[in-house]
Image (cartoon, rainbow, N blue to C red; front, side):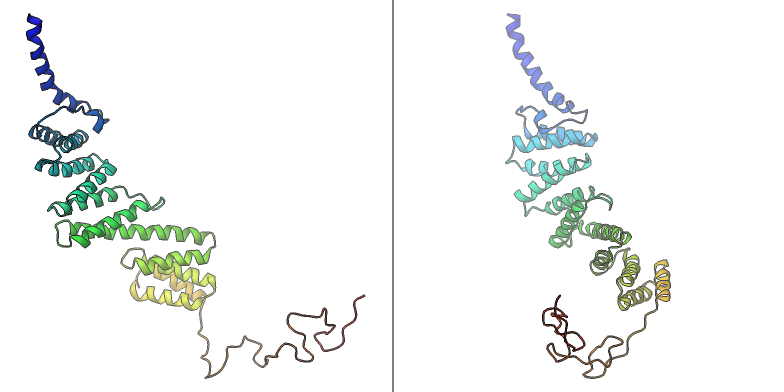
Length: 314
């Protein structure tokens, strides 16, 4: 009889203790959504527990419990808030991929919500925190740039836009640094044209970055190596006009001193450019007597370049 009476009490105790046990399961950092057993709980209890874990700095547990709020009570007003709090908790846990996914899900379900700018901001931050150094692939960097740009475009007057613009400048400088890294690599291998294209891209696309002085100096080098001193002179002139006191300009100035460029005299009206040494030469049509056609030489026709009869093949 005593055993029968104690079973309801035991079940009640298990139900009461299940909530904190589920929360403690992930203290080792391995808590996942599937680790939380589905135990029907009211939304207030779930949300309060998730918020408490967040305040304690147990971010992964908090994120999973906020997800549980959405799973058990998808149509409550708390579910929408929990979705955004989940994205924030994942971000604080440095689980940036999960944070981005949660924030993007919030945007997809609640695009017109007043918290949508913050969701866009979390997406951008998730990409921004994953930016790698310039020696590695910069796909994440470009994604960060796109996400920050989307936030500024959609909500230019939001309280997150100012920080987004600042981060965009930093990201742009990082992308320019990658172009410079590749350009310098090509230059050390003597691939002047490929290097020039990279340095030119920095000057054209990232004009407000800190890499412009070096890019202009490198262009001076590569244009000289390509044999187009006029373009080298232009790059050095732009460098001197905008960054006159830098070491990059001093290097470019010395390069132009060592390889002086003198512009050619302008052509008279109607005058054709003729290579040096051929000023008095006149064009002769193929087939003119005494001149072998260009594609025939001195072979099958028996006609030599001097107009004499050629000898027959022996």
